[in-house]
Length: 106
View 1 (cartoon, one colour):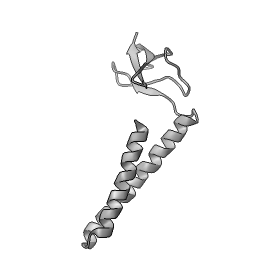
View 2: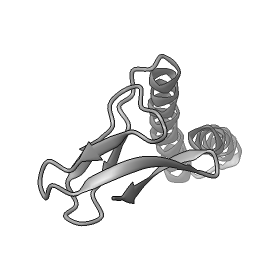
View 3: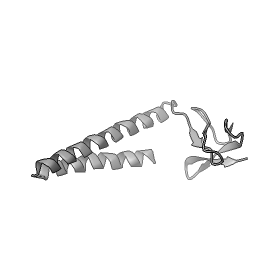
């Protein structure tokens, strides 16, 4: 999912730069350049997250559906691992749905 978003952001950078090159109005040119810069920041951030995941340095967290607090499964979780919400005490199990992590209340 993050890689798909990364591709989208890269396309946005390209498109905004193309718009900036083709437009004659200086204010619109400046606006498109600023949009391209913002999207470039998104590209850089997503690339860092992808690298953290590949390096095993990204902590897997979910928001507790009961109270909204973070529930952490650590940096190298496995399907079936359990974690307790530190705020409300509910226990969750890490599951996989469609190739991605999700949680189930125990």
